[in-house]
Length: 185
Image (cartoon, rainbow, N blue to C red; front, side, top):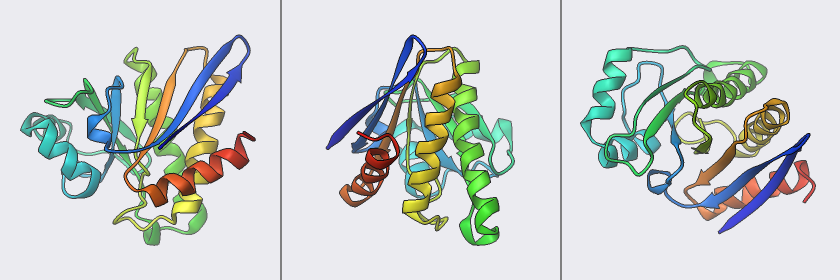
């Protein structure tokens, strides 16, 4: 399943694509790892990245050490189809007030896009950051991620292609419904 949305910024038209699939199979310049602050590739998206990308990604994470919640750092993609992994430090939902958790999630998305541009890359694939073990409500995460991506694309002068790759059909439907309403398709 897949949907595309076009976000205009002056002369530029950016593409936001939502799809159901395996993020480790995406061929974008970078895929996003829903990371923890100590950068240990454990379970969920991080575990899948570790298994398919190889130990080099964890070794690079170990060299970086850690990052703050809401931050984002980049490593190579190891054996993945994508050449880079951007590790976005999403919030553990119950450790923050709902408002602070929302700010941290928005920052992790925005900082991932900044890291993408800073490294002169133009395409990225996000998972549903913090919605697994970190317990962020999926509907609210979809609203925050889509609005943050939309705001960023409307302000950048660089041509970007952004995907949100969702593992389950249910997650895809939640995010696509939010995108349809928010982006008025």
